[in-house]
Amino acid sequence: MKQIEIATLEHLNEFAELFDNYRVFYEQPSDLEKCKSFLRERISNKETVTFLIKKNDKYVGFAQLYPLYHYKALKRQWLLSDLFIDPTYRGSGLAITLIDRCKQYCDETDACGLLLETQKTNKIGNNLYPKCGFELDTEHNYYNWWK
Image 1 (cartoon, rainbow, N blue to C red):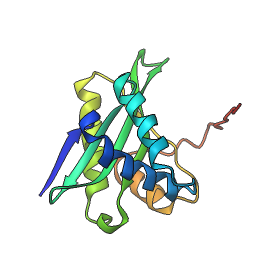
Image 2 (image 1 turned 135 degrees about the horizontal axis):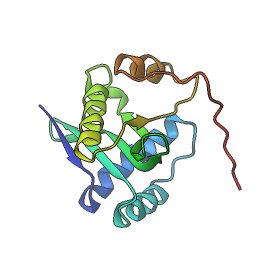
Image 3 (image 1 turned 90 degrees about the horizontal axis):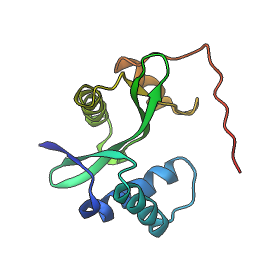
Image 4 (image 1 turned 120 degrees about the vertical axis):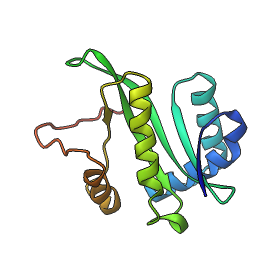
């Protein structure tokens, strides 16, 4: 049985473990305490909405949304910033379930849609997102500025 919950501070330890594993997947060094601090601040300041998915009484994945605003639609748009399923549980449709919950949340918040970005090397994501109705934007270049 699977269940989806919105992450609160009560979920911090389990969420931080998943988030740390997500970062390691993207070749970042493990730092559980820094992840806890980062997530505690995001949740406390209501800067994110995160859906945690539980299977057999264990949290096994999450989808993290941040608010954006779309200039054409003149509405909120959600950035699906982070999506992760524990590798042991991949292939069982949990990511699709989380994405569907994010889409439902767009309806609940009168948002115009979801935006996401993934690395070109993320074969799993690049196969998954089109199956979930996402369209690849080939007309734009995305640039980052880091300090």
